[in-house]
Image 1 (cartoon, rainbow, N blue to C red):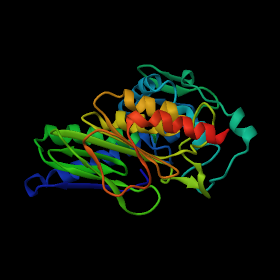
Image 2: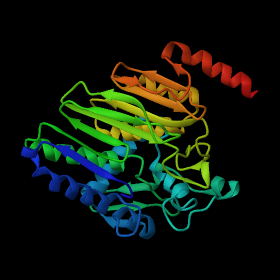
Image 3: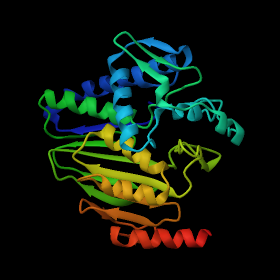
Image 4: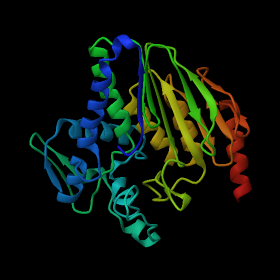
Amino acid sequence: MGTFAFITLDQKYSFATSIFFQTLKQVEASLSSFPNGLVYRLNHHRCIQTDPIVQDAIEKSLYYYKRSDGYFDITIGSLTKQLFGFGTSQEKIPTIKDLKQATLGVDGIHMDQNSICLDKAIMIDLGGMGKGYAIDLAAARLKKMGVQQAVFGLSGDIRCLGECQVKVQNPFVSETVAIIQSDSKDFAVSTSGTYRRYIKDTRYNHLIDPKSRRSQKLIASVTLAGSRQNAFLDAMATAIGVMPLKKAWMFAHSLKNIDYLIILENGTMIKHGNRISITKPTGFILFPSTVSAYIRLLQQTAE
């Protein structure tokens, strides 16, 4: 999946290590938009035979699309894969004209019992939830095997079975800015950020608003934490990361029982929830009661 994976568990559960990595390989074979992945084949041949993992991931993504008011849109692949070429040897910055003319729309995805097909010019990119999906499947398999204590992750998606602490990375330099303390037997954390993939500099990052078709400029990273599925948190963090700032904050705050930490490009931190403790601030720390006033100030300054 083009990133790092890890797993930490007690010696008595060592048998689960191979299952974990086998699961990641299985999901990658289905959801990867790079050569040898089924999604790559779907994007380039328009149709594939139904695959349970691809179908399930797309069905979940269509729900996330509705849940996020269209800001989580897997047909963003028409931009991220076809125009920008993120993660390939053909990375480039497309023209505004090309961005405007690109075809997006979840109505261009068609599934039945036998096949999954895309309309002409539609390309999908499951990178905004695929890692979380892989972690969810691994968690389900490990729990079924009786694993009760483990910490494992794939890039910014981390799962805790049992008690754990998770460090949140500074999006500007290599250091920890916050610690998240789990409070349940099954706990998930997901971080999405502009610093993870970009062309030339973070102005042309992979977190692209499907409505404006522009890369995110104000939000550097979004971390969500709670007793939810990683795929859900992964998708919601991606959606928040591409939203206009006011909508991003209001949407994050609407997620029930989810703690969040949003770090802006100017270093300002917006925090909610007792499970997140900031250890090294990157700038001012805002809490929900002060965010609205701060956003109004930013808007007045920009005018």
